[in-house]
Length: 310
View 1 (tube, rainbow, N blue to C red):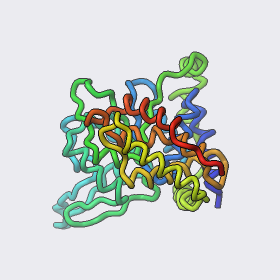
View 2 (view 1 turned 90 degrees about the vertical axis):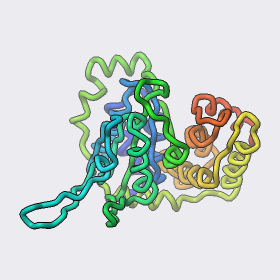
View 3 (view 1 turned 180 degrees about the horizontal axis):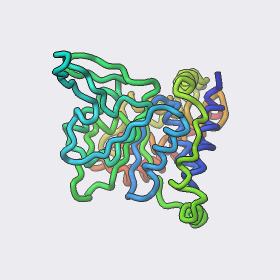
View 4 (view 1 turned 90 degrees about the horizontal axis):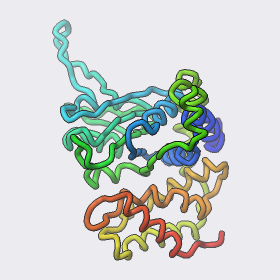
């Protein structure tokens, strides 16, 4: 069995062949995967959101599902439905795209709130209940959703309960000039997607996720995480701080980042690396979710909370 550090290194190299100039985004994505969480990518079209999801799925070698969200998308278009078969006189369950190791939900905020809510159970419990029957999802189940900036025509803002299901939210941003040159000349980008060979398999990734949750986290680091969480609750510029579930998620993400960094223990640097992306969508600024404004406040809080020596 490969260690979480080895699995992360192999996937990082494979994804880096297509997603050029985005090493930090790849590391954060892998930290989310190893933490057993789910990822939301906010950015304008054309910055590589879909490419990131496809590259991860190709490197893992598991089943890949994709949903293109539209306002008329139904919940059953995600989860699946029961179909009557006249030849046998029985109802047969037809699985939806959610039954995958890596699920890409493209432009999630173009789906209606009713359809968005269909993801709550699978993202929280790794299973779906349809017509009274509960169906387990493949292991691992990693949901990557993309979101267009709020304010575009035909978008429905995600409610706080849905946002809280995502362990981490990141923005890819534009590549630097050299990376963009590699993309347009075919040395990177979608042109190389078909050349990515699986570097691991779903069972190994599932084992790596379990092993990551056991990485050593010093009590001083845990106290540091609790101090950061408390700081969000006491900050006057935030109308609502994070919940205990967010604190637990931050511990797991820090463990995931430690594995990506090649270590078997967590340091304050791991916490700092994921802190803003893990909390920006879980706090409220002026009674609403505003990840851009929250990012500035959280980055400032990092400079105010004492860092332990471990």
